[in-house]
Picture 1: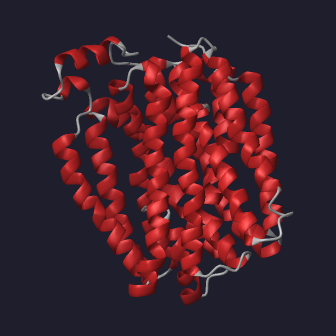
Picture 2: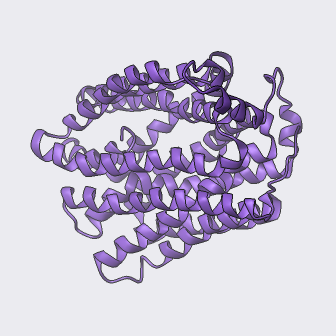
Picture 3: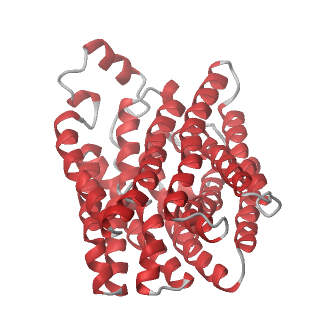
Length: 400
């Protein structure tokens, strides 16, 4: 909710402050400046103090930054960019912390479904943010979006601190038989003291993850940040319609992510190799969005455009059972740190390029070209990712 609200609020904000598309792209991308700083740190902190405290810190931090956004915007562009980067610092620790917790709580056989369920929470958060933002803006003005959503973190933190535990060993209410089941299926029996970065980065499957994250995130983050603008400018929906229509693709993603997780775990349980399953799921996650984005220039009605977008993001969600489940496949003992490392590379070579520069580049492209030009770039990267993933990825353990 806190990440997606800017994609709606940016419409009245850009009108009020007279921002051009390039400036809008810069603002949308500034989130990633802070996001890249805490990816590796988040994994290290989670390994040291536990995922519970790290995730709690992250939510409180980004909630405060969200609430400060309207104040920063009125002070000036520089202040807004700094606050958005600060928000990214808080969100940057979330993924490493969540992966740390999941690696301790979830048996291997339930990995795809658990990841899909957690990620579907983000999709439903996007749905909620996109649905309520137009109403809040219409009734109370665009600052209300940031004040209301930011305040929710204070409610969440009290529940989290009282109910969550970093591992089964810390939960006094967990039944002993369930605790034994979880611990007996744990992939890591002892803490990792040193991580062989050189060895990890010498493995082609690791680079397949890095390149695939780059190709995937370019399209995903552009859809996350720019779609309300697309619906408003191209399909001529008003602010409320843009927010409500944006809900459909994210609902589709929430459903598809859990469907993909169930399919992946079922295929593995029936004897299909993990490598084959990961390649199948991620190929759908690449080629599905690529195909449906190419159809946008051929549709002649807003309804068909929205349908194409929903199908694009729905097939994109199969990536949760592809590359996002692959970290623990190839190096289970290092999975949290590997995810942090990959995310850091994604932020430096993929996340910064695909997230920060990709989002900013969209504004530049729109100022000098068209939406068709932007979609062509995304489609090209999806195709590159498909080739690299199928050539070099594996579901087998490459590090003990």
